Image (cartoon, rainbow, N blue to C red; front, side):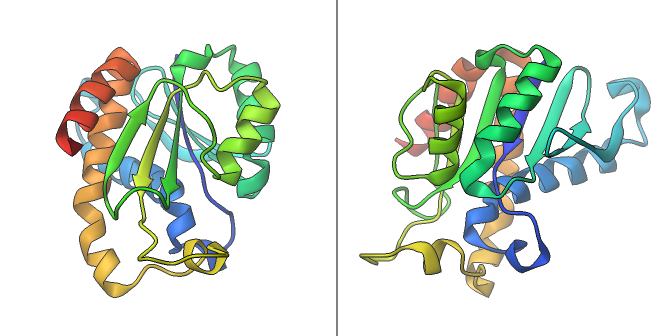
Length: 198
């Protein structure tokens, strides 16, 4: 079994913000599965309605894939991630975290098998709760447009119409990365995503 944790903040006011790209990535992946659900023989039974478990919304994707949206707010994401990993007996290498990253240009993806938080509150919480940096992550660039100082208003700000117009191909690439992770772990994701961005 593998799980993909899309990080974000629950609540309507955060729905279309830059900090919620992890949630948006899960939503986009679920939309794609719903579109394919008319072909159930390809994927087996799809449970595309989320179930609340351990402070998270958990969806059952195709096969043994879980899609998870922590409902703890970003800076406490680790509480939900740790609980879901424990509940399902997941290995850390089978648990992919998807989140935004201000250090990457808009729309750029970067995959890593492990690493630090890089100033990201959600990743910092997960590292603190798990007691290790050794879990895969896929970061989605939101840039910072030359901003300095407190970046909270930017990351919590709503996506502009221009950003929304450029978002669909980014989320399609994230969906492809999720498929690769489900099939073969983080290595094929790194091989494809990081090569694209070099």
